[in-house]
Image 1 (cartoon, helix red, strand yellow):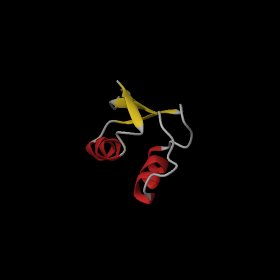
Image 2: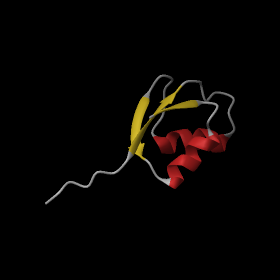
Image 3: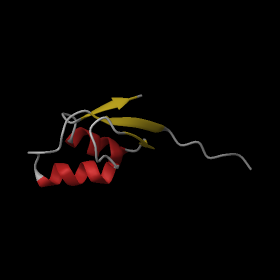
Image 4: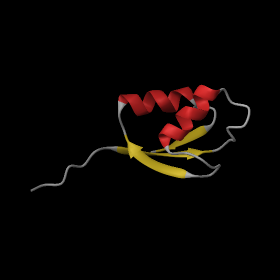
Length: 63
């Protein structure tokens, strides 16, 4: 009855999505980011890392 401890990362949106291409806007929404300075904690997986890489200029990763 042990807990499943998945590795997580915190992602903070640091820039506005205004003017960004639609695919980058959708990536931010998929990550759960809607406002500047919003922080979300998500599971650390290759797909999430790829999404972060796509919008790296709009977000910061807080390890």
